[in-house]
Image (cartoon, rainbow, N blue to C red):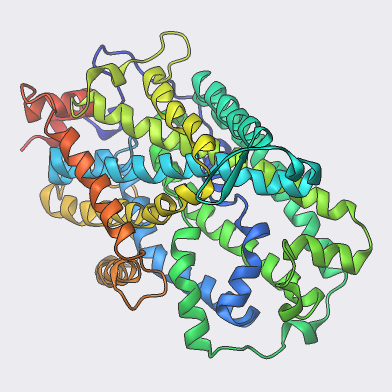
Length: 485
């Protein structure tokens, strides 16, 4: 049996559609990464790092830290180009519990980010339509006002993305293409406009923090801001077969490098237009300094529309990732079988989509303040998912040395060593009390533990009548013989 015969089947044998081309993979990955941070949080980056030079170095360090983990995906994806991504790699390497743990981390990460977008979008809408800030307050949660416009916008995002997901992977990828091209083009328009007003002396202004302090302080949050490239792994099973397995994996690296480069250009543009110390006093630095420099208020609207498009793009991509993880778990009997259902016409995991949509729809009623601790937990879930994949690839080299690997991790043993060191470092930035990126004590530590214990609780209700051989057959389709001992 050749590994090129790998395919995805649900329990009933219905296959998911292979309809995503290479550009669709890029669109899903970039769409998940390039959301609103570049517009709404860039001022925070400059303030935290103490100047543009430290921000740029922080981004470069971020690439260095994340690349070894991304290289693991570069090997894993073409080796097992199946939907479910991290679930598949960790299942084959570590068995049922390892697969469940990686998938649960992925569900938490994608699901929480999707929910967050339904409340975060209200900030963008307030800039676009200032009148909505005067709407009658229905009630407050933790000081955050819930208004009818808030609910309308949040639920609108949920309904739109649910419809996109329900109609199929091809529709999801097509929408991602349109959204990604739109946001990238509008962001580039802003960058070009910024460079027409560029003053190098502004960019070279003194930093308020040392290079080490500034760049490392920023790195603690950038590691999780520059995430989402792993979305490509979850869509590999629905990628067109003529793309080539190696090319599917390379799409992930392209997403990572492209988004980092675009963010760096935006920081340079902001810092070159005006002194960065003045720029960060604005609510939306990129838009505000452009308007001040060019005298064209329309540029602010253009960039806010780009950010709104980014919200929809992130929602689409994270919704996709969460549902594919849920479906993968259901296929192997690690959660109730109902989640394995595939729509006969659209070839989509319908029950998974409705389940995730229900949580997203509830979020606008909760509000931003109550939801912030959950957002912080996504950092831990993201790192857990990356690290599981990294060590799964290392384990598979020992467990199945003869498995066909169209692409191997660049750097060999050096990448393995660096990846191990960086994995410990990233975990330390989240969990160690002295880290600037740590979870809030004790509330967020307790919340993180509770969410992972919830996953463990669900795991105890797995279908124990299914043997490991049968799980392999369900998860890997006709290729299960490749992975039997």
